[in-house]
Length: 151
Image (cartoon, rainbow, N blue to C red; front, side):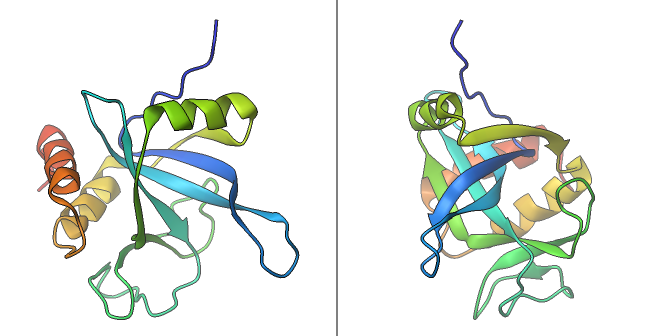
């Protein structure tokens, strides 16, 4: 039976070739946070984690920019061992079919680690204030926040 990339909010996925390093030409890995999943299409709303602040602050944890927007999640463990942010500038809608292809190819894999629900709620609440959120993304993220009963 074929593997299908089915995501849930709060899951952390590893993309082994998120971007090419301009200097070396090598694939660089990034960790994706699933923020929401469209119940009709199965498409994902994601953002990447970064350990490079580049203008993001630890306090307050919710940064709307400039120069960048994101949420500080600290070092929750697992693959996130150093101070880390969810980078809202990397926000993407990803098609479920494309994610399945990437998973089948071995490039994309789900980690056994999820972002803890209280931390996910803080990220979602911060993200709902982000100016560059599309209407569809806002609806999906808001639905997840309501389902999780985020304060």
